[in-house]
Image (cartoon, rainbow, N blue to C red):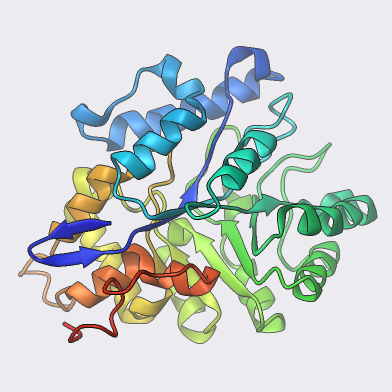
Length: 332
């Protein structure tokens, strides 16, 4: 929980990871390229006081994760959104067993989402059913630019993807998180294009499609899709740190999202460990649209509370303690 100026904020970090990018886990040069690109994002968009060394960035472990999020970072609950990247890392990039074990140890603080890839076809579909039972899945994270054999990406409206989405519907895995944001070397830019969300959201109205990174740099495309598809949501991973380096750009991002989607379909995330949540929460609570950007309305306290945690809590059925919701107060 974060408290500022007499207001209490329930914080859900809706996009975190526990990764291992150490040299011994890198399968090839692409594993190094990927984590180096991650580190460049971290280094270029973080305040100097928040910078990690490259070595600790490669692997930080569960103990540090718990400290950075829950001891220091104000987070009440966090959701793992893993990327497998089996073509780049021996045991995968996101560490399934370690992250799931941590979630089992702290079920009040952590939710584990898993991943799938439709290019594994029937074998992968069978695995999804086993994973759904083992992990009690409420959501999955899709990385549409991931490499698999000769393929360098897939689409949400591919026939096999639809079979997996049908299975998610059957298994009550309602929350489909998709990386649709900035390209990460060596992945292909076009494989992250947001356009395929449109058809899938129309054809699966019972599923929530959380577009991570809100489609950046294709924010306009995303907003036009999300305004007509009520089951499309915006994840603020990667967008959040621009509050430090490019505050007017961040104002444009959040202003457009609030105009097109309203505050009920926007979710805060630090994208840990790209960034830590502490400074992002502090900056966002203090943030206001510049007065000269008159096309955007000021951000209210209630809007900030929804974005910082109440929206994701509602989506995942996370209990919000008495006094930390909106019902107990006059909506600002």
